[in-house]
Image (cartoon, rainbow, N blue to C red; front, side, top):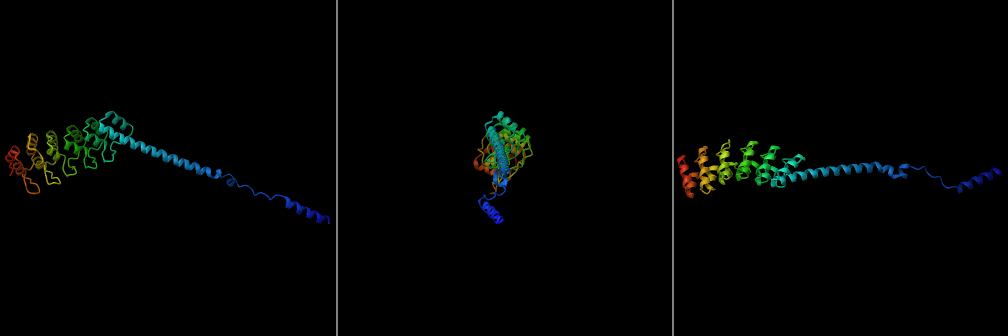
Length: 257
């Protein structure tokens, strides 16, 4: 009986005891233990990305500033930005390098500094202009000489398929033509319109003193005076048709027909 009472007492006591708690899992009880490495990795990734983006933006800003300084002719800023890491051949939205921007504005000293720093004198923008071609077309003699001294490609052509000599003759840039004729440039190159430098000097020139002198120089340099355009019209015929007597006389003396 006593034994039965002891068993019954133990049963009653067990009913009143609270259920045993499962052993705590520290990774579940404290989620920070699990998330901390992930948070650290995420923070490191974001920080690295932000730093890279900042460096990239900074480099792009320097490049843009260099092109702007070159266009303004701000030589001190050009030198400072190059020293700070701006890329000498970086391009803007129009495809212009700093040297091209300087050439468009005829900033001679800025062009000199950029060429000395390794600027590509043959790099073309979206208009197919290079510093060399543009200087020739616009008669920017000092920049032209700088580009010639830095390896200008004499065979390079503009968007009309012309060498630097052809537009120089068109626009009457006497000294530019003289400079180019002192190189090995092709005096009889034919552009996309079917014109040589001689034809362009007659067809697009005004027959005045500058174009008379240019025709004289082209003839002296060995230009083919009877090389006709696509319609078969020769330089002499064009000159006579426009009433350019002095030019016609030069061509006739050189065997023009």
